[in-house]
Image (cartoon, rainbow, N blue to C red; front, side):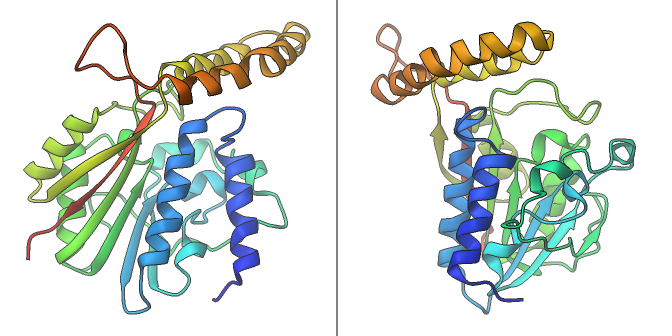
Length: 262
């Protein structure tokens, strides 16, 4: 299935506006969207790309698949059995004519994706790692399905509320992620971070508003978004470094690419 540049732009807009809400809720997810577009632009038709996602939440589709329509693309819905009770509760986010609905290739547990050894030139793990209970099985499977000389891309938040409970297990630092990738036999490169302390404040404010009754929430939301959200985003861009302590950072997310040795 091929898509036009205009269709892909529309799909990208839906992800930014409705799924990841980068202008109002999760600004650090811009990093994931940028990375996916970049990696898709670098991919060739000869490549096999595997994406490990939780598609059940969105009706069983892959959010990433449209961007890799020119490749041999396989999306594995890794939603566990425990997610079945929640169903497609994020379905309203993709109920938009611009959204390109591409069903997942199949659904399988992360420790047994059903894919062959060394099948993938590129494995994408977008915003999934913290939802997997069996971490050794996850990284072993990622390494197993990546071909020698292939690459693995991982995106993870460093700050999130407990969500999609009970399937929310841990938060990695970039350094912790580098370590587990090495332990799996992969060679991680440098990581890239997104966000800072002011977007963290904004994110916590947005989450806190959801705990208020509707009558209190609406005026406080207007006050926050009209008076404070733009200022926090401006400060995040202008003041990226801690002025009092070295060796300190406050990223909201990070991404990293690891190679599998030939």
